[in-house]
Length: 333
Ligand SMILES: NC(=O)C1=CN([C@@H]2O[C@H](COP(=O)(O)OP(=O)(O)OC[C@H]3O[C@@H](n4cnc5c(N)ncnc54)[C@H](O)[C@@H]3O)[C@@H](O)[C@H]2O)C=CC1
Ligand SMILES: O=C(CO)COP(=O)(O)O
Image (tube, rainbow, N blue to C red):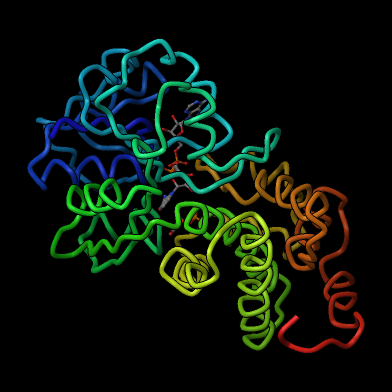
């Protein structure tokens, strides 16, 4: 198949290489013109995935139209808040034979849309069966080293989910399938907010008990909000839910956990973000989650605490004790 990957960050580059070794004809699109040239020449993504060779057969380009021409699949690996502006440049293109696969994990701040919703909103002629998602516990740093990983391919159309599954599966990258596309997207986006909370626990020197509490109560609130938004409950105990929450809250590779850790140590958000060249989706997504939980009247105490720490400069230690001393309640609520 001809497959284009839009976004040459760590994840886009990793998947482009995986797809190439799976026998596909692969194009990798990079947003910055000069960096596309550098990548094309050096065949190493020093900024986002150092130490990994990009095969010379992968075409690297900054020309968006060219990257989108005659593709069977287009993989979206762009930070969520930039996806609409990229898609708006190709909305006149004929995509009647193309399937779009989002591997980005966020919610659009201004519209509160998931990535599959942004794709359909921006590219009006695309049908739901042409849209899918690939998500789960999968740090680029590990997949690019062929470390055994399991993820899930989702589309509201079962056949599309299976096509995505078949395109990506390898002996070290096991892909399951589901039709609960929204559940997979909400799990992947919301876990980033909880992972910032887990990082705050690390940085503020709370303990393992605290982290286990954040993760377990975190998946409870992800499920609560996700279900109110149309997702299926069982998806949240799968790879894109609990699975991704575990890896993001525990891993030294996680950018979201890192942001939280620095906040927990007393650093300012704007200084942390300035020092990073990679995206921590949970920062902007926490704004969307704050709004979604208000709009749908769903309690999300941990996400809400993360939002207040990030954007209202609330003290992490004080806010933790506020969380701990809320009204008594049954675990199932
Ligand atoms: N890195 C990872 O291990 C994984 C990342 N993801 C998700 O994949 C998505 C992309 O993440 P990464 O590849 O890690 O990103 P990254 O942080 O490594 O790279 C960012 C990319 O965005 C591009 N960019 C910067 N400004 C832009 C703009 N205005 N418009 C379009 N592109 C722009 C940069 O040129 C670069 O290619 C995110 O949603 C992330 O949550 C999902 C699974 C694993
Ligand atoms: O989603 C990821 C792993 O599954 C990547 O998480 P971070 O963006 O926090 O690094």
